[in-house]
Length: 181
Length: 299
Ligand SMILES: Cc1cc2nc3c(=O)[nH]c(=O)nc-3n(C[C@H](O)[C@H](O)[C@H](O)COP(=O)(O)OP(=O)(O)OC[C@H]3O[C@@H](n4cnc5c(N)ncnc54)[C@H](O)[C@@H]3O)c2cc1C
Ligand code: FES
Ligand code: FES
Image 1 (tube, rainbow over the protein chains, first blue to last red):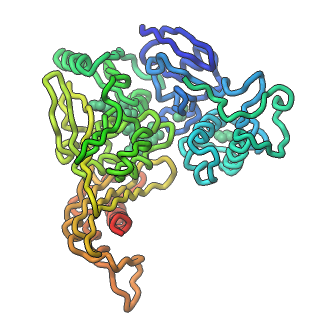
Image 2 (image 1 turned 180 degrees about the horizontal axis):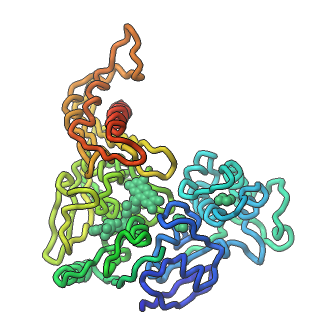
Image 3 (image 1 turned 135 degrees about the vertical axis):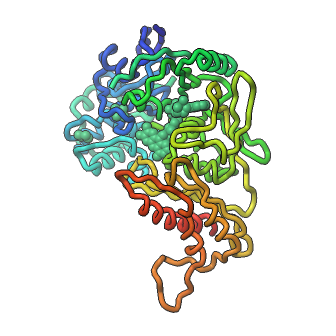
């Protein structure tokens, strides 16, 4: 069986993997990163989105062997010092989730969007999240949350009710929360 | 679903890849190459494909990147859609490629899916095949026996089938620069975001003194392969672009002859029938979208 080395949320793992093992199954079943859900078989829903070497990718459409020597960041690796990432906080304070199934992927896609477009228009947000389906919210609050997250990440402090962990434990918002290789 | 088991081979060089493919073919093994995996992995997960082995081209050096080569732009097969969109050479010299690529899938899929994979996959609903036939691109294939050029008009054989031979790898595509006077547009009709084209039209139009000197029109999803709308191309030649209309007949207003010419866009096509559209509706779309694309490209 192929042997791979992969860094996930800052920790490097060496794993023997069957070639057919999908990255998302490696994350969930081997490494316990169940924060990344699976929503479809076709690459459409985006629920499984992670950062692969710094850019968004659907982890259900990547083989674990293809991620050999790559750096993966999942929703579980975003927060610092036990606090939430500004984009997580923004989703919380704008009520951008109901069942929450799409949320990890939405947040990863939103952070990816901001790398190229730090101050996106509503239209750019909708385009940037077009690979992520939400069956609950109707998207309006998600768009609002991404706008708020963008403001926070660019250093502006919006008047907001802080998320559960943010007031006491998280550091100042920074634009470079996602680790790249 | 979990894909059926397969062997995985990651060759270190293109030569090695070609030899692996040749040996597999000789011994009757069902081996497939994988590039970005964005079309192949869903097929494996749905168990619509179960190859014995995958040969991963993903990390081969030299197959990735865009080069300005004078009269054409060379796009390496392993260049991702995202890299194509960021390439200044593509945007400046072959903008039709960028216009169509921007409509492919979504950002995450574009980070991994490749230019060559989209073409080799030969889905007639894919956006890039129509562009390749409209621009008369040249495909470069490599096997253990050497290199071969395949004109776009001969590359697409049937639904999901190309004229690549067993053992051949697509290494890149020459996209001709059309030069001054040409305008471009890709018009894609979908019902939802991140969707495949119900019908798409890739148009390149050269205007001279207010009339159409030359038009090239590629059709997406109007048959089992991408098509050229040759009848419409012929009919467009020499027409004035001065009479744009909205499709509504207004008494006393000059009717746009360009619209009539685009009425021939579906001639000779046998569009598919599926849950999105019947063939007659697709033919209607082809006519309307061709008009929009030609007007947008030739103004
Ligand atoms: C949710 C979703 C939406 C999509 N929407 C669109 C869309 O709107 N428009 C569109 O055009 N596409 C769309 N796609 C497909 C996308 O463009 C894929 O990136 C592309 O079709 C395949 O590229 P790939 O590199 O991922 O190829 P792979 O999946 O790796 O391979 C696809 C096929 O091509 C063969 N192949 C790949 N590279 C080579 C090569 N160099 N030489 C020989 N054979 C090769 C493989 O053997 C396989 O049969 C979508 C995909 C997804 C998942
Ligand atoms: S689970 Fe990956 S895109 Fe749906
Ligand atoms: S919150 Fe339920 S799917 Fe988006």
